[in-house]
Amino acid sequence: MKEKQPFWVMDHYREFYDKEDPSTGKHINYDLVYPEGFGEGLSGAERETDYEVILRKMAERKNDPASFATYLEIAKKGILKPTAGGGFGVERMVRFLTGKKQVREVCLFPRVPGEKIVV
Image 1 (cartoon, rainbow, N blue to C red):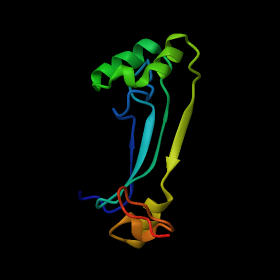
Image 2 (cartoon, one colour; image 1 turned 90 degrees about the vertical axis):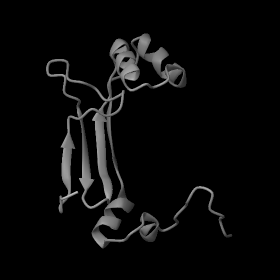
Image 3 (cartoon, rainbow, N blue to C red; image 1 turned 135 degrees about the horizontal axis):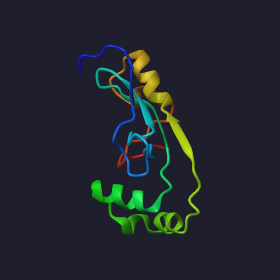
């Protein structure tokens, strides 16, 4: 990647639950990406509530509806409330700012799946 500074990616095709603006077809979401392989720093989106749109987007992305049965049931009943949310990766930001190779180098209590925990 040739970018040297963090940059925003907005309105992009991502998860099935990211809402699309019905008038433009753009996705209502964002990511702040750190350059040089440091990854995503911030991420957020408005959530889709329309059952038919959710089904279409799940099919496009080859998601298994059975894995989301309860979610789909709520959406089908029309009681899925409009929401939006975002996430901030503190360790990823610290890793980017310090230039560390691994996130675990900046975590207070790093965990790696399968790694033995010493007590």
